[in-house]
Image 1: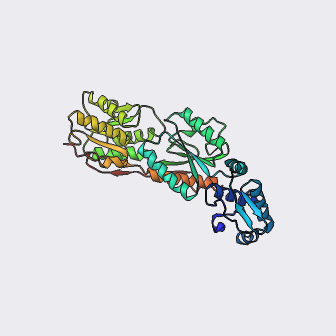
Image 2: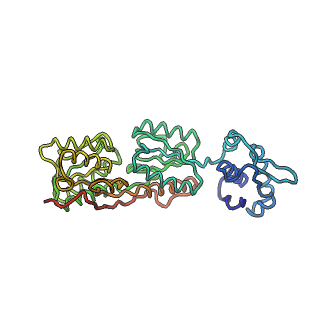
Image 3: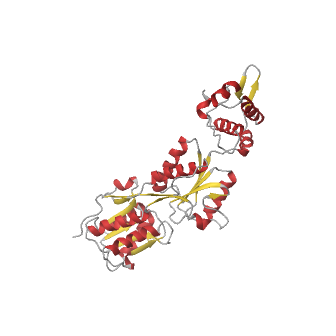
Length: 373
């Protein structure tokens, strides 16, 4: 195999050339690119290909042999040999782990599924392994998972939909936890490196669309806690009403204990108990909206003739319900790609051109909304 195409020598790196060669060959063995029995280039050939002196290559090969990963024999060259995992663990003591920890509230939500697809696409291209941890929206669990990942020696961290500044104590820097680069995702209040979706715009666009259709009794179905990544959506809803000269009715703000389908059902049942029904609803997740739609239909009401409804995220299933759901598209897969790219830059020791990236949202019109009257 052409080993040279897998090696990337950086003469500005603080690590010696010997360390870089050893680390990268160790990872190629762990990743299965170099297999048992494969022969490494001769010291002379690799020296010429990399433009590195013979002594440096010889030292790197000797270290790999001491690590129990290769064997050199006179006249036969240097070959990869069978090894125990402990050989790799010992060899990786001062090397990059080529792993990244990703901390998410859950992985069943389609939003996070799409986000992780974006993360994985960049990670796979960089031959990086992902450690995925779930918190169920619990900050204490998030802190514990971060501590575990740090202990495991991951190269970087993506902390998703958690207020990292609130989780960490004041001695920790949200840009680098225990010396490990960190990017906050879907975290509007983070003071570190962050990639966000324009949540205010999402709330504003959804509400403005309903206002343009003549609706004024527009309910907001939102989370019962003022999470850092919920407040901007709520502000967008309120901002659109204020700009239209419509008074905010607290009775139309329905707070539910979750972001899922069941929470939407519960919220809609509460709205149906009110004296005056809303003519339109903005739910801050598509899953909430789908739950609300089920209850609306069970109550004998029609969508959109009796109640128009808008969601947020544009998950795949909203196109197959009846009627298809009008929603605001959240670029969750792009969110994953951009956050992983930013983290990769930090891991490599470079400074991203933008500390904060804000991704736009787009209103997607379908049949769940119509002009009032």
